[in-house]
Structure formats: C-alpha cells, structure tokens
Length: 482
Image (tube, rainbow, N blue to C red; front, side, top):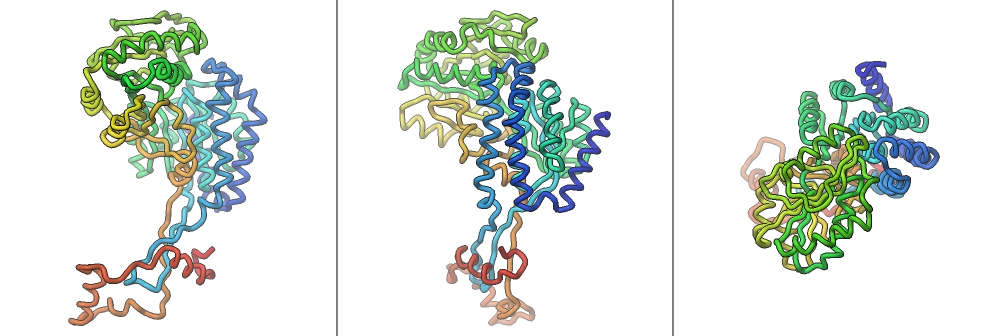
C-alpha cells in the first residue's frame, strides 16, 4: 500500500474506533496497556535484534533505555489509571452557591505519534502509553531511519493492539500524508527544522501539537565538585547511544582552571566506560558526515579517529570557542566540546545569549550557585549532579521550552497531554439564587450584583472543593456523577 493510502486507511480506522466509544471504557484501556506490556515481554528478543541492527545497541542497552522504560510507563499507568480518570472537584464562588463544579478528563480522539530514529522503540511507544491510558486511538509512524525496528513494530503492534494502535511505515511522504488527515493531537520527537514543518501542517487543521526537540544542553562545572566524579557522570550521559540522545550534555561549560582539571578525568572516564568507543555507531552516513563536518578545524584534545564504512567516530574531546561552528547546532554524536569562561557570571551571560536548552546540568556543591541556576535560567529540565536521569523520574514532566520544544509528557503528564480536561458545573434550579441577576436591574439589585461580582473587599468565601464534591455526590444521578 502506498503511503498516502496507508495513512488514510489507518486514520479512518482510528477515527471510527474513537467515534464509536470503543476506546473510552477503563477496562478497554487496561486491556490495551496489558497487551502492550505483553508484546514487550514476549517479543523482546526480536526488538533487541532490530535495535542492534539499526543502531548497534546491546541487549542491555535496549532493555534499559528502550523496552524497560516503556514497560515502566505501562506499569505506572495501570497502577494510577483510576486516580487519573477520577473527576476532580473545584471550588464554587459563594455567589453561585448552591452548586457543584468539577473537571473530567476525556479522550481527545485520534493521536498521531511521529517517532524518531535515535530511540525508535521507546519514543514511538512511550507516548502511546499515555494516549491509550487517556482513552485514545493511536497511529504511529516509526522512523524510516531505523527500518528493522519499524518493521518489527509494524509486524507485532497490530496483533497485540488490534483496534487500538495502527502503524504506518514510510518516510517523509507518509508523515505528510498523515498530517493531512483529521487528527486530534500530534506528538513529534525530532529536530527543530522538521518540527516547524509538523507544526505548520498541524496548524492548517488547528491540530494541537507536542514537540519534543533538543538543542545544546550544557553541563556547567565549578571548582566545588571532585573533577573525577563529575567527569564520570558527564561521560556516561554524553556517550550514551553514541551521543545520539536529545538530553545528552552537548558541551561542558566552566571556568578555565576547572575545564583544565577535567581533561584527564574525562579521558579516563571515556576509556573506562567505552574503551576506544568502537561499540558506538552513527545511524547513517548523512549524520556521520554532518558530525565530521562540525569537527573540521576544531582544536581536538583527544579522540577524533573515524571509520566511515563502520559509521564510527571515536569519542572526542574538543577545546571549543563560543563562535565555532561546533557551538552553533546540536551535535548529536560522540563529540564533547569543552568551553572555558572567565567565571560564573560569564557562564550565565553565555547561557542567556543562547536558545533555551532541553536540559541544563549543574555540577556544583555551592548552595548559592545551585539556587542561582534554578531561579535565573530557563530550560526544559534542570538537574544537579547527573545528566539524563530525569527521564526516568515518574513524577517529573519531560519536555522543552522555546526552541527545545513545547508540551510535556511521561506518566500522568502524558495522560493529561492526551486528554481534554472538561469543566462541568451543576447548579440546581431551586432555590433560584440567580434571580438577583435577572433584569430589570434597580438600585438594590445593582448594589448586590456589584458586591458579588466585583467586591472591593471579598466578603463571601468560596465553597471549598471538598464541599463541591459532596454536593456532586449528593446529585449522583445527574450527568457527571460517579
């Protein structure tokens, strides 16, 4: 089937499932989540083999950073689904009492997930977990740059998640065809230029989007931390997946004496964790050539060897300049620039002059420095003492800000992203306390209305949410009761 036909067929089927009400019951959602977890367990070896073929990932890496993360999302969603879907009471202004107010999360309808190549299984399925938990039908387009993983998803998702998730394979043509269809939400992970095209296409149909992008995530290090400990953490986060991770530390920033002190510990950490790094692999020749081009003319401290036939670039440390090409775009490869600044103030000036990153990492034992970074910088996430680990924190949203993305997901944040939170108000017809608002208005009514709607000093307290919930429970037979 050609991409346009496949896109139309998948979205039409998903639209029919959502419109029929099939996806709304909690039991249906639980069955899909359990089926997804069963697929990860029962087809684990096939997914691991596909990830090894596409990206050279080991079985351990595939489980830790792909299958296991999705399985964890599923387990968390199953444990909290009742809580997330329960109506939430809201306060009622005293002027509207007696009344009950609450919010109810309802499915959006059809969610499209456009997956990237660097974590082709996790970043296709993790958003789908939240979308299914929220009661949506889901269409996934995996990345064509990870063809084996895409093929395995296309083979098994329809069998385990029949009537819930559809997979459309293909490249740009398939993505464009999907974006031309009527959708209720688009979730995209990738680069900024592609994100602009996705957002523009979605805007033509007023389809909301979540954009998970990237950017140059810095790691700031000062003299208060042991250089060896910081180097080990930075090397781990940077060279994970061959440096092809959106939240990898893109460069290290610090005062020159600190940067100089980090050189030997970083080299030792790379050697200890990766050897010569021959297990690392770029995804294809285009990305290999792009990273190699960024290295041209740079001051390479260590590493720098390459093998184009094997798509291999040795883990490389570079002494960078702020205006060098290497510092103008996200590297997305095993190259770590080290940028020296005069002091902490100069580091802040540098950060303020750059687009807001997806993550900012700070290695400092100074409480004043840590507080300053928390209050005076903006980034999708801020982590002290460790890179990338915030992805695995169930209670934290994952998302960017500005050029690094819009919207967030993970755990309950995924559920909220793929839900419409509907406002519900229930006011009995008797007693008719709204009578004072009905025209005609005389001096007495006018004075009462002014005091209620815009009082100079608040006189009447709001009806608290717990009492609003009690009133709703008392009118259980009305729409919205539970």
